[in-house]
Length: 495
Ligand code: 5AD
Ligand code: SF4
Image (cartoon, rainbow, N blue to C red; front, side, top):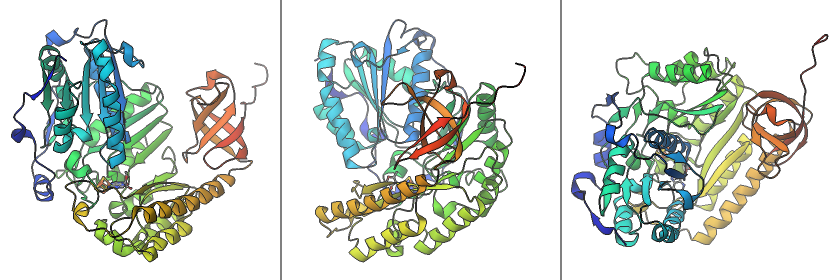
């Protein structure tokens, strides 16, 4: 193989293992806004006649990052392909949140070896959250010589230079910055959708929940300036986009670091975006601790602000929540839940739940079940706790066997399924607004889209409806989707 497993880069300069103390200290360092991104002249045509493929694992932040990488590659002349055999550059954008997500990526890059043997000029890059972990990078250096390039979440804007190095170097190119601080504003974006768009409003997370790797892989909280966000949303509206999702790991902390603005938070931002002529605005992910009354009041104004709240609870037991470092109790979560529900009565609620946190007792787990019964969530992402090296929880001794954790997950999922079916059943015979996103995965004669409350709706209709908001009458409800009939607009007499 052409590449040796030798890093060109002095590791110690870039890497530190996850350290709570260092990460917390970094929070106080200033944020710089970079507005002068450009592609070096000699790199502008380097991708002409060549193809790229980006494979994305994990959350919406990764999806958004992949669209930026695609934008950069397209500005260098590369064209997208879905076929790995036709690709000249493959980037694997990874997720570090749980061990099984990481194992999937290792399996995948392992299977890429033959591609590289067939096409020695192929560049394989590993990026995203896993690249921020020193153990992962060492493992790739040792075991996966087919990888040519590793870069992290803080230096995506360096992709042109890094790709240039990878193309002309015989060694694996590794550049990972453990220290963030910058917001790069004018990066090109090749958006995947033509009517739905992700809009980052902030980066990083300062919450340091004891189980979570994100504050180490994504760095400290940095908010984009409101005027930049508003002008991006206005531009999307002008270009015919129908829906934006405002993104951040903890969107409710938006604005806390914008010290020159007087208490400007997510409520203020949403109140301004509400006035922009774009039909649907969503936001995620929320943290119950920072979800304030002003935001609730603004959500109550409705309009283009969609009635779907993703509000991760993680556990229904206050002692576990305390050890998780979540900063709220069961009672406070429930108060917040009911307050939002009273102000936005038609809102759909979804959540994230972790079972089997170290030493979680049966009684503590049952508190989670009883909270689910009280909230009757429309849906939930449920996970078995996965220890992440370097996080405080990973150092806790755990006396709960995996069999018990698996059995709890099954019991929880049965309850979640029950409420998902019940909440969908309420839609029977209702007429709902659907943003038509495309054809159904199972049948291309069937169109598919989402309601404002984020329910999947399938119905038969002409493909010309794709990208439009239409009314659909629900005729059958299932656990995770709704079937319906398209309500054709009445013809205007004389036309
Ligand atoms: N183990 C299991 N689940 C986790 N999550 C975050 N870290 C872990 C972990 N170490 C879950 C949380 C979070 C979602 C994105 O992933 O529920 O809200
Ligand atoms: Fe992780 Fe907690 Fe931050 Fe969410 S709020 S990204 S769970 S540390």
